[in-house]
Image 1 (tube, rainbow, N blue to C red):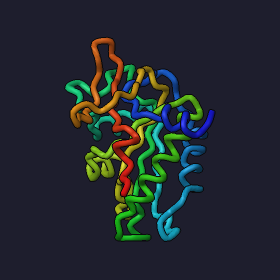
Image 2 (cartoon, rainbow, N blue to C red):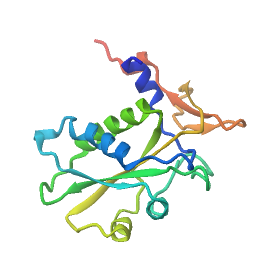
Image 3 (cartoon, rainbow, N blue to C red):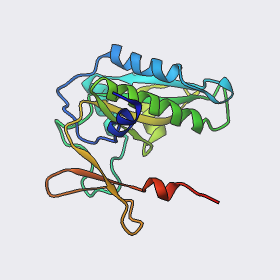
Length: 190
């Protein structure tokens, strides 16, 4: 598969085959992709907490919000991710915002998940302090994002943006539509 096809298939999925487990080994392979990715000033301030047990997955699920544009966007029982990667900033290494690292690492992980026949969703709507407490994380680690990982069971398609409306939606058949601006809309020429 070429890189463009891989990127196009790496969508934000919100429905998964919860019965299809994701191994710790797979999660480690995905974090290895993030570890080998670029880091601003080569600081490498990100750390990862891996969850793939039902008990820990429930803890994480109860501390995140799903699909703000959808009325009923959270996955139902049986459709939840079978693993999570909790991305954290090690505050003993930096007080600056490592937002570049977070984006680069997240995309590397999601591309790797897609390559393995998995899918995911990068979630920023996290009750960070409550989740940190629930997982018993040391205070030097500040949660940045949660990456949901699993076998996707929904279809996600691109749509052209119409009248500036970028809100994703599901149609009557449960197909998830994601409006994307055209390439011409992104290029600024003199």
